[in-house]
Length: 193
Image 1: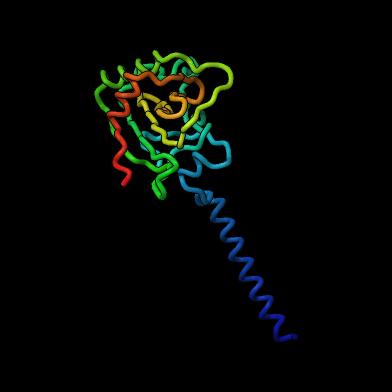
Image 2: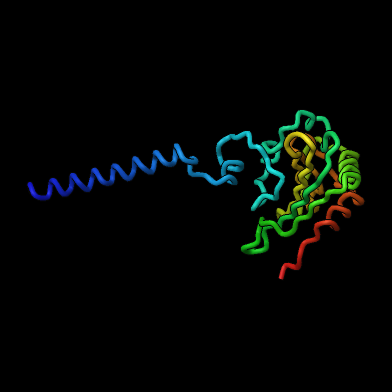
């Protein structure tokens, strides 16, 4: 028994050192989460959104966390954006591609960007009350409007179920045919096969 005690004690000390090292590295190096998890994880964060498509689309109700612009509650696309990045994601019924990026397009013509922003801003407001949105398989398009100064404004667009556009604070229903058609034509979904 006396021989086994030093071996067990040595093993316990080694395990304690390993556990302490892992905890210390996790807390001091980078908290153990990827950049994506920091933005969309369980903890509340005030992310600084980069002008890039997300690896997977954000979860429902997370869009408000991504927008820092103070005018966002008054209008869907505030100010005068200069660039637009459209990111279209698959819905739920595409096996390993489900909810992943399907297509993206960068628009750098400020006139076109502002025309799309104006078209979205002119849509009727989201109605009050309860209503059903059938046949929504979760496909979404995200529009990131970039400004000369400050963070981009991120919009979530849904073309199925109840077509709508949201910035997390303000929304519009009935994503209008001309605007929806133009955005869908800019980022058409590739063949599912």
